Length: 236
Image 1 (tube, helix red, strand yellow):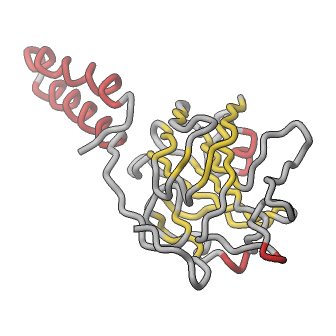
Image 2 (cartoon, rainbow, N blue to C red):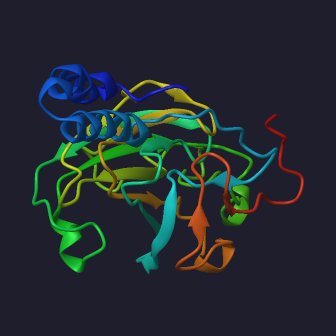
Image 3 (tube, rainbow, N blue to C red):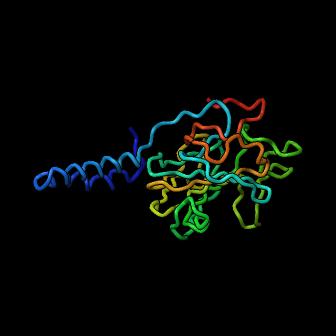
């Protein structure tokens, strides 16, 4: 079993304390072992195999947000403590920016979580698993094939995966860096002890394109959240 970075740092103390606690109390020793084992379970990082086509969920959990924001669609996945906390790339692309935004640590399922600490991983993509925009222009790109910018000084981006901290999840660890090329299902970061992950789709995606609903259970890197257009390349 693989573990996300930092797993042993958190688990080592209770595991090392367990034999010493046994001298004083069997119960205390068992509690220490349980804490260590539970911590490793929180940080587990199993291998995932993406299906041949389709945009995949960036996180384990349940769909908690699905809405239009201007000309974009946002999908949010809420993770509980028992879910795998490793975040994965929903489609292939190139990372253009990784931005840390300070904020609060409200429960990730509350409306106030929109002001929580977060990390935005922005990327450009020409994945065939996404619908093309009108005029056969790649999603998020202009007529010359250049990435669209929301502001002149912003890095180019078609899509954005946001790792959001919560009341207990106060450690966001992005793996991706600007310039990285991602394949669908690649690990891009983890959030210690669960929280929420948002996917802001490229502008070419409409709400009716999304194939999941509020409450649906997600498996990062495997559950298809948007079916690929006909003729999309297989990514085996």
